[in-house]
Length: 278
Length: 298
Image (cartoon, rainbow over all chains, first blue to last red; front, side, top):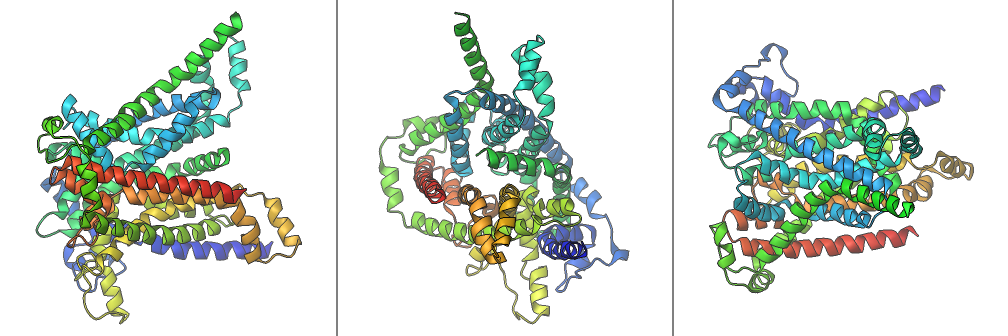
């Protein structure tokens, strides 16, 4: 008992030491954002923040100087749009692949691998050509479709694993009670698959939020930029203002960190089920 | 007769449910792929996309790509970048997964923290590392100077000699959580009874890993390596946002090369041709790796 406890504490200590290194870049972003420039812009910046100098002055400044709120709103709209499109399509497809044996199984497997193999820099060429022809350049719809297309195969595979774990007998019982297939799916299976929906939504949200290539190439007007494109535009300036940049970076980072921290258990569970299914 | 209609109805539902995803994959992956192939046969420049169809057809782009020194240079950079990312990320990812697989207090929160870099957008990771590795004010140079390891200010991302090593770091940082996640999932599916049996047989921890753990996670490991290698080869957010392929092409991976050819010089045909070649090489390697993974497993 005590030996196990001791071992557990030793593991915890080792993990904490590693986490310190792993999380240092995030810590350093936050440090730079909340300390005045003259402290951080030094040959020997302090590794721990002098608490009396902490200030949030960089935030009102970046909100005033750059259209951060517009970029943030654009990012949120694109992420929500992609989530809606991708999760609905992936839930239906994942359910179909889980419950019915069709020739589509293999095609979907191929689609998954193909979508993993396509370089963003390659797929963006046809997207650009296609969207130029149909007038989707400079629209959020274009970016949503591009992101959703890349995310759907993996989300489908993740959800299939969750549907596989739900016994078929539940739907069969519901159908004996007079539900049709759609009602059984909608009212019985989907509520049970909520952890799966959370896992795939986390995946889609994180990937879409991070997208730079599609957003940058398909939308060139600054008022259409997403947060990531806006952040990158800081770098092109003659003199990089690090504390302003890091303050903006925390704005982009925080929503995803919170989302990930809350929903990570579902993701791990999803990966476990997926790997067992294979 | 009734059974026949029932079957038809089942097929109809099966495909009906699949259709939205199928349409997306067909319309936004297969059709674009076709467009890339078609475009790769168009020779010349096309600043105006609508005029692309009027360029002459031919295999010239492919021939030119195979003889292009810059393409070979980028291929070498890509190879170094992929190997330099995957090997350390796998080692770190596996090490952390083994630690997290043990039982200890607060495991759930430690696990979330360890995987956090995966949720960080590539651009944010890029600017964080650029700032940490800044020549004059970067914290890394400051710490190295204080420890007496260096005397000069190293411009990690700007110097042609160090840039290719520097871009590895944010990539490894973004990459290892995926290995931790998949390997941890595989580790948790290894039956506990096997470990007990090994212990009864007097196996040490090295033998235990060799004969129990590794066979249990091998196929997941192979799949994760394939997927992550493809990700590193195709993704260029991090290179794009840190060095942009510079200085003087030192970090220009193939993905970066394709993007520049297409959207800076508007040689859509040439860019597509290089991309298609890349795709063939990746598909071939993935196929071989998967075959190898299956054979070894039996």
